[in-house]
Image (cartoon, rainbow, N blue to C red; front, side, top):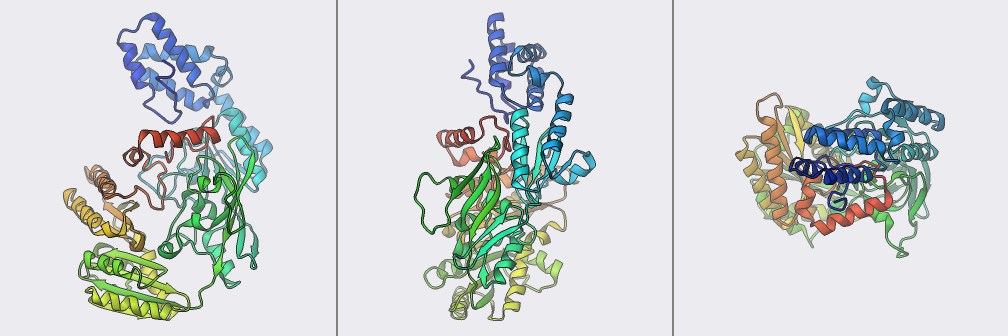
Length: 540
């Protein structure tokens, strides 16, 4: 029976099936065996988790819950934790204050700012304490206390994530790396930068630019998001069309494991095939395997020239046809799409005057010595595929002003109400079908959905805008979100291109991967984090 009911600390439904069996006239012997198996299975969980699962048992059947409680209290691995959760929590905070040089915050009012990221429709718990680490030693000390007390830890950078991965869990330690802000080295000969996890993306971009170098990854929140957070989610950005996502620019990482051990993975060399690629495993792991404290990233020579094209199309289909035609003819840095709804929202906010009557707007950026020629080629291809208005410039300030329209797209869409942002990716040639499915969802559920994204790599961000005070609006928004994800998978796509899964999308993962694939993921989690204290229940 213990094998049948394997305990998962993040699974609220764990006790439902045994509760049903308990009510189904188990013998007294079978009931006692179930109680004892449950106590053994939950061994090592935090006090808050133990209490939560006892409550779940009680809800399934009061007698079942009482039996489980007694078995847990009698189990040697739980006696210390069950003595007094209040005393334990106070002890955890005091131990953190003793061992951590950074700020330790346990005021409920002060902790409120740390409870969630930018995904407002995911739940957020009440943390036990916030630790603002000032050094990697603080991270090590925090994780040692967490391991010894089996307290969950949620790592947080700047809180700009869009999938709820940094939302607080009840009774958890919120571990902030935002104060690890030192650029340790920029090696101009090797074209690398070594930085702490809390360095802002824009900060590194500007420091590299001053040395005529370029840190390429450019998420829309680059001025306020951290390198550590970018790596944890494997963030993308507009330059993905040519240069890939964050992970394509990370050479090595220093990270702290759940037990407090420090590891370094990867290499500063251009090639490295030694052993399993742990670097790739940690990039995008969303705080579930380790806490990233330092990274060495690749820099490129700063492009000598830039050129930008803005093209309006009568339909989204004609815009995508132009995108497909670029392949083999030009190699732009960015190819960004905005539909009519998004363009109108951007114009209303910025007065930048994009064509509001167009079915779609393409923004194309080219960089390098052939930037002007490539931009001219892109402009010509746009006209060949039905663009009604085309503008292109080699002036960097004009180009940046054009690209700004795309950078503010989400902000513009969320102004009228609450916005539920999606992140889906399909093969580029299937973008018209995905966009048609998005339109169908908007019509079916009577919602406004503005779509923008990275057309050259098939990664779109349908943004569902609704009034949460309207009866049924939230349900319709979630139904539309589900419909878009289903359509993405039917088109051979993925449920996330760059934002990660966090607490927003793990339930969809079983629709993309089979049972065996998911068991491998959870197996990797167990190797790194046997007590499941790092961001439990998130990502996978």
